[in-house]
Image (tube, rainbow, N blue to C red; front, side, top):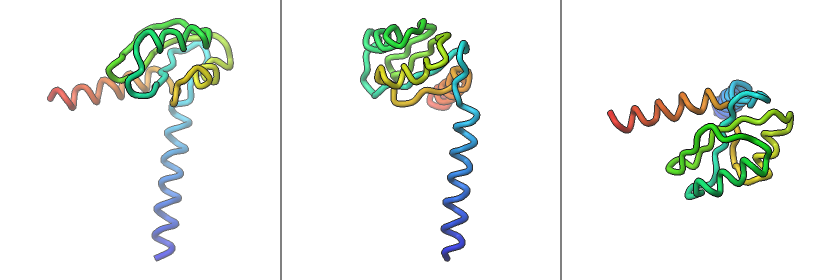
Length: 105
């Protein structure tokens, strides 16, 4: 029974590691910042400005901001400004589109 538990935990850790590697933000490329639910567009815009980025798209319904910043520590700055998850923007946009298609269909 321990082997099954170990296998499950190991598989879960590997899947999480693979996701993090694929979703790692690249400086100079669009970045998706997920904020706490209920964060307003002005609050997200202020956080992006504070981090030194430029807004590409804001979605208050999902509390997601797509932005771009040239600084190497831009993703870290977004965390400091209030984002709870920062990932590659193209991956996030495709996930959001997929979720919307599922909810509409």
